Image (cartoon, rainbow, N blue to C red; front, side):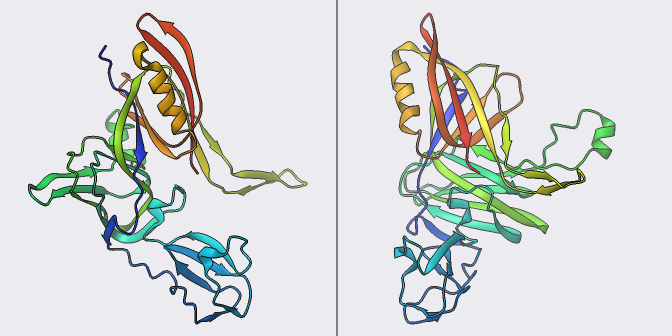
Length: 305
């Protein structure tokens, strides 16, 4: 039975040193760790694209990557160049006006998902070593869905989409993929970039719920005045979907297998609201009904911070 493919997932392909070919963002946040250098407390170094903080004076010859007990080093965050690949959405790579990355995965990549994004345009180019450029698209990130009349056109707040999904990249196994963010006169920012192959899970129902959970704390003092402590938030996606009965156990198994691994989930209903996208974990998946040749599932997906 053919169903509209409105519930999909993208299992991420890891971005490694071998995959990332170049970037216009220099990896010069701090000096590289050197075994012969003595570091003081508070010094920061880079090792394997992560920043580490020295815990004490006289810190010599202690490899940060091997310090699981954090005796000498405390891991901080990824370097600016590598922040889009560390599974932490809230921590953005930043650069004035533009930033670009070039990848060679050595396998078929047909999908790309960007999160916590700020840019005027996003350009994606796929170049095959034999066929040349097989895909070259520039996406305008202005979000005009709130413009419903002439007054809104002139006076509504300027809004940009903070995410982008592409699930129709040409399937070339040896292709080079370039990603370029641009914002002339401004600053581009990117929380996460996820690459992989899209897999259809079923057809989403219209009763889609997509709340979010904020970790911001609002603390009143003795006079009732509220002090706000800003913190990150995460998205939650509750999806009911149907799939042919003959593949229902396979579908449940695929979701269960991804339960402990960050995965991109995309849902599109027929209401015209567009795709809803979450990068996170499956919290639960429950077959809830048999509808003739179809099985209905309910699932909850919790996004990453």
